[in-house]
Length: 68
Image (cartoon, rainbow, N blue to C red; front, side, top):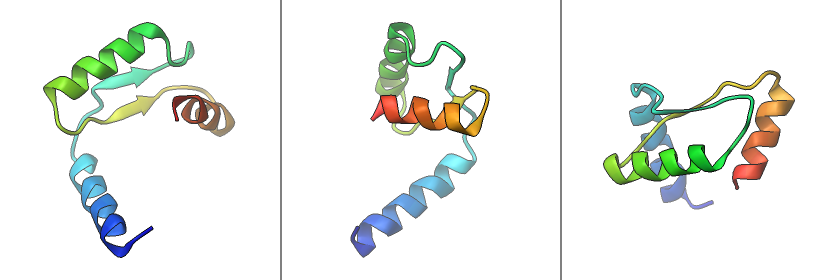
């Protein structure tokens, strides 16, 4: 990762820290409805915050892996 990319990530995290979550991913994971809501939110906003409301740390990691 380049120095500029690291700086950009740090800057986006600082901006995102103040945001409230726009989309919440719960126990059902990333369903078609959640994907549609993500698309809508990204078309309305330049930067969004997503809340992962799943149980354990391992479950959150599994949801993140399916997203990428």
